[in-house]
Length: 280
Length: 159
Image 1 (cartoon, rainbow over the protein chains, first blue to last red):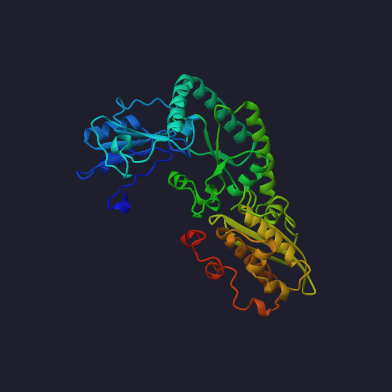
Image 2 (spheres, chains in turn brown, red):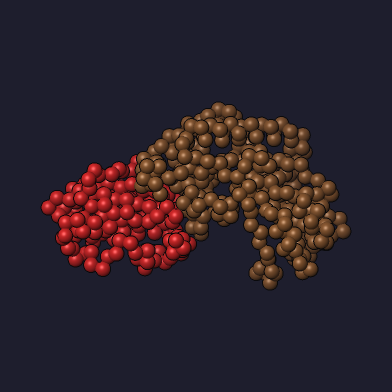
């Protein structure tokens, strides 16, 4: 947006991972055209106060867009009730095919055509539609609605068990952002005195895939901006992993992962030049 | 994981010379947890030959591999030979490192020189290879081949 000449105001987050509603409202001017806040953050899983943001946006006559990619299938979304004008979602997060998404646009709202050429998608986006993908997305949405309650319960329980096991069995670990108002399957944990990419590689050799907020794992060599905004000290961001569970995860998977983590963390702590005794 | 070659992965998964020498003749620490890479090298020296070297590293796969191989490379070398070691040679010995990881070899090189610097300070000896060397310099990294300051995102300068 900035590259196209728009002024963008960025909002910070508190240590609970949520934006401050007073700060949001105070930032609105008569020039404000759009508020865009993600429904759920993908790294720490925090659900933003969407209903309240929708109310504020409506009160000031500002359009409200939310990125609901992580929210779909995990939280109830009612675009009318929540005053959401535009909502982005993606198929792959609800076990649909990759490469297809959707943008809900409130009736009466028009967007400019941004890919020119053919008249597809009511002249809003040229290019032959990914028909197989769209059908798959539709089916995934149907299944997701049907499984909604089970999915939320299954993921929350396994995630809570994972977090509990890690925090109890591995010292000097902690959870980033609270469990309340959190994506059911998301856990984001800091392991002190060791580095994320190293953990990632060792876990990969055990057949376990995770992601990390460490600078060393990103092409830009910059640590996670989300964890930075949350107030996590940089050296601890380097030792942070995001672990997520899903519909196909079992308790045995969790036990296996925890066992592997204990081994990996122990090995890396022996290699590390920093420790609880030595300090940072 | 396709980023690292077999040799790097080997040194990472099975690090050699990992640990800490008790009452070392020289100890060098370089980098910081803020940057995401911190290496410690301890050495045992006899008659100006490095008879043993061990490393401990807080860092990623290439940081651990670089310090593991660097420690192996200096064992059996004279102090002068060890001082002549460059980060380029560390990379060559590893069979290559991804561009974004070159700074890890720079850190390993610096940590080794720091350990020898410490040894020189303790014994009062001087070595030509240490001339102009500053164990606390952050800037050194940014002038060395392959690392132009963007590697750490300038984190070390924000301290």
